[in-house]
Length: 525
Image 1 (cartoon, rainbow, N blue to C red):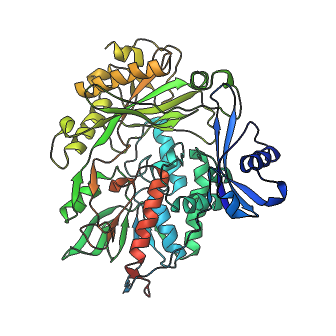
Image 2 (cartoon, rainbow, N blue to C red):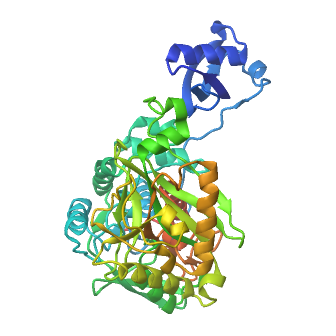
Image 3 (cartoon, rainbow, N blue to C red):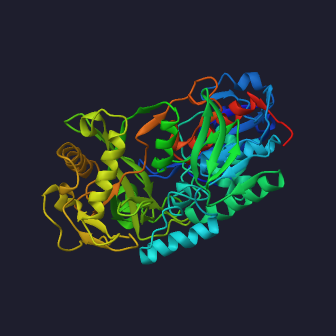
């Protein structure tokens, strides 16, 4: 079978795609046995809408067509894994956390018959939804069940973006499993696939119930409090004041469980500080983004809602970029601790909200927060506390982007109404951030206004503080075994500092589960 890139057509009709494939290969119809779309993208530049496809095709005279431009032999992307572990487990392996990394680690362990125990400090999804809904409506925060903690992880309250730069063959495994459990099959071919927060619910529940049929067990509302370590080997876990023997544990705790990280460090886990971004959410109307990005195609249902990605380097050397852009989405209250204010972005599957929003982030380093291991964590927490005290309760501090550039507190909105559920109050965000970060954000906004006229001047609104896109420390792990300095403990996902986003976290979880199974074999438990 061959894979053909850059098959372009102005139509998405199968007959037109097939005709474009034949033209691309200069192939007679009788040489084409079968074909299907592997990847699809859309380009609205040059005053026309063009679909670009990557197509897998079964053909006669394959060697002949492999000589063509943009044609390769179809790579083998079938998932296959055979555990090679030799150390028999006395107790079932444990997965801590059921976000994307923990979900997929637990899934492959279950598929290989390891019957994992999954421990999640937050609640199961339906109860978690109720807790989050109560917070968004009444401002009543449950520190153990919220946007950060609970079944599905932070990704359950997001746009559900599945884009990734990775070429890892496990990408198809992740997308295929999501489709198996209920996701739209289009995620297998779209260049910018997404699921949406609402569509994740049934997928996560279907996956959980299937794992239970394979022998997995779930403990929700159960927080890892401590670990028992002897001569650098993991011996037991302590959760909800109960001790359980454990030789092998996948740690997928996400990037907000600072209390757990400190305990693990005290027990000997090696950590290193790492750079991380900090910033704001910027909100425009989706109509403006459609106009700015698509022009004459702003109403084309094949292209809307539009999205954007912008980057720049400030004069002080700091990188600034948009991240996690949510077309037709909402800025959401995302705090997990009382007295700290955190914002994030979310979209539903239909992306039908009035506004578009994106994180606008500045890369920070030790020059911003200091050289101690937990200096970055303290820096983030101080910003979140400061943001909280800029308003009343969990209302979000906001400022028109134009007023932020002028160091002026906004007094009224100008066409963009903040979507944040708990309300807003005007504040000067220049008072929130240190000078170096303000300088970088100011220069980025000026640059982005040049690149996308109206990015600032259309009445766009900034909300703060966007602070949970990355952890401030990395859990050091061995490159080959993927174990931490506590043997038997496998850190993975966003909280480990080795992944970011749903797809890369899921892949990282799978690889850590593979590493566990290549060391430990199933026991009788």
